[in-house]
Length: 431
Image 1 (tube, rainbow, N blue to C red):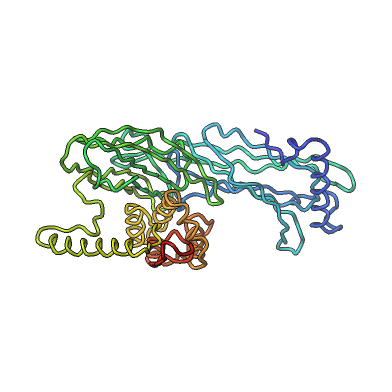
Image 2: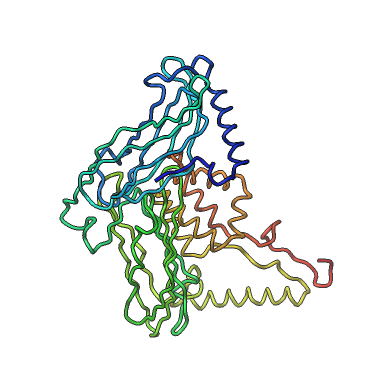
């Protein structure tokens, strides 16, 4: 497969300008002494597989190919000719990177870098054929086309030897990833749903180091007493410098058909940790349909209900009195759904940055106005940026205090920008 360096799509005039720009770049990078006749070692191209933990990969496990070229000659035009990779699925991570580098002998050269993620289709012994970097260079004042080849690389894909699971097993689904996180959110608290009412459940499964087509099909959510309507599965692949991140969103509309409390069992998703080389499990948490009050934080039972009802009546009477006196309260608060708040605190206690970030994403989708407040406050904005660097950065950064951040993100806020405090205003006064 031939991949051109952004010249073919721009037309002759535009391509010519970029060609000249690359020529000037090369001339600026290289001293006149280096622009001499080509000598052995002036143009080198290497391809290095980056194996997880140095271990042989399994089927469909991501391996990064680091393609690195060092060129002492000025380059006028270039194109990368990639081998067919017939036994692999592959994707390029980001754009090619050109830079100036200084060699061990003090000479200056141009460095070329590209990263390709490959996923082997099956086990066996393979050979990665050479990558070719076709360069048009200035050789003592003359244009010359030179093919710079990488060396062929032996590439072994290991066969699974575990007692259960593995790439060839039909069940459970084979899911090799650097990390897996699950976010479970509901359109309302499922414990408050009554018979024949409908609530929507949304589960987001995110796996680092995978393509979206490698994620499992929608899990089966079935139990006695409920009717479920499964929505379409949405899949997307997010390209990051450290590798692709696969995301699948599963949606169900759930309707209880009986008045009793209906338990929903947890759904376990096995996955293979490519960093520790061990089998692990992610979980869609167990929940229950029905059996709760609209606000479980103020749930009361037995003898306590009488006094609390009296207090509630008093508060209601006080509010009624304010209305009669011609006053009103600025109403309306912003607050994360309880299910997302629970996910944030649970991930914070487990110090699981990836799961915490997935819960933040669910909160941003559910409450965009509240998420905008987070980004407006310097302390939460800085903590969220640090969290993104930890989860998605090429090198893990310092993880922020997740417990403190969870408390900040789950606070209730007034819809008015100024304050959420009680504000008393005469009904006939100025607004």
